[in-house]
Length: 273
Image (tube, rainbow, N blue to C red):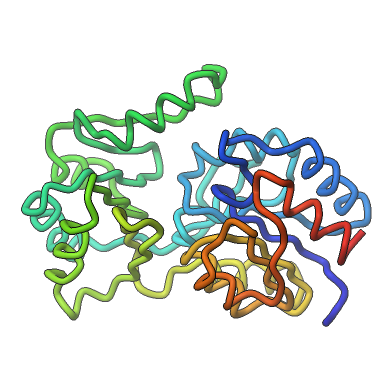
């Protein structure tokens, strides 16, 4: 394996603990890696407004790979610099099925996070964001109609769908047209995330890595969920968290301890620092 030049980090379940914080041990280990000239980049399913507070906490200068690789957000210019959104004909076929199966939807737009009223998942998100300072609080866009949201706030980068039960999610996936050309990530039993075909964390990371003059063999990627598999299968060193399922761990080269036990710091001290 080549010397590590890039550390790619999933956020939820990986960099962040169950309480949505980064442990001091992990902060210190990442800073030690950066002091050695190693780049650290966040690669997340989150909207950039949800990822930016942690990006700022770690004082990173790299861009953010967001929405499961749908786009690359440059923090210095505060702009999306490249990406592939969902097309109108795709979301126009998806949204009626969302309504049919009674799913809660979160829409990732460039200017904010769209949702309908009484979205249980959004309510949970807002609860743990309550302590953020006003300048870091995401822009939530509420409307009664998902269609009007998507017509007004294009481009649509990602659809995040949830339900209290996994059965409606299963039925929704089964009802999707075969020729829709989207990528589905079942990141939870009662949830699914949809981006345009070809978008993935691994593919966007590969694109950025190449633009910086690094090879994927020089990348160490951490993750815990299905949307991290595309990183594990492309980088030189894929590290699954101890809290990841056995199914996810089998795609990684190594397994570290859990996100609540500073698994990133433990792996960095073992293999990098």
